Image 1 (cartoon, rainbow, N blue to C red):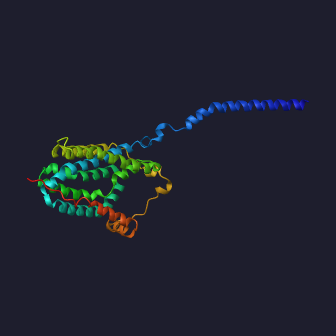
Image 2: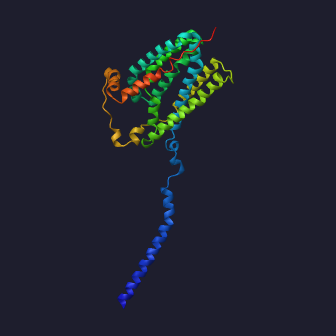
Image 3: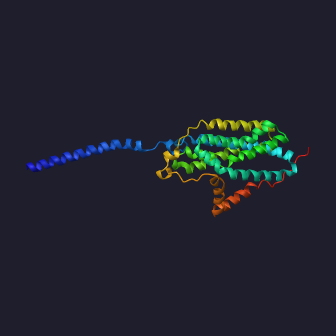
Length: 299
């Protein structure tokens, strides 16, 4: 009987301890779930990577600045001074620009990988702003137009390397880079439409507003200056090393000299069956608008 009594006592104590542990777990479950549940901000790309917004705004302003200069300043100047030769001269200029960009793109890309990415991106932006600065320096004249064309050729030295995209990768977590790339193109193109496309329709097509070339040139330079100033407020670190898997930390083998800059890109284009038609298509599309004749206005 004593043994049976002790067994009942042990069973009662075990059941009471089990009930107390269940009650404690019930009380602790909500707090544990709350601690494990991610806050709402963690689901938003820009909240997880707060520097993405600045990169997108910088790139959007820079591209809009270039588009405004080309649409409202360089285009009318070409129609005014080149007249019936506009398509021919534009095509020749495009060929020179593409050749310069192809030859120098690899070298500037390597340079941007070895220096502060913000400095390389500022040089990239400055190359696209050179035509506007040239017109501002030489005036809205024939001389200013040729100075802008020369500035386009100089700017082509850095135009082939997509440095803003590289900067976006630097400030984005490895797992978010695919989504960030889509957001980059979507928002930069949206800014171009808002700042250049819609004003072009309102001013040149519908004639709702009358804005001179000088005012649009100043606006283009102003937006370019804001993009460069905002660029250096971005804090940069080595996101590739910090956020990527260890397999991505290993540096890829590189070869130096002019062979890596000039020969290897051309070999890659002609030897890759999938890259060859893509480059050919891009080459043809780049000249698709150059063959459209523009009737010059009578003086």
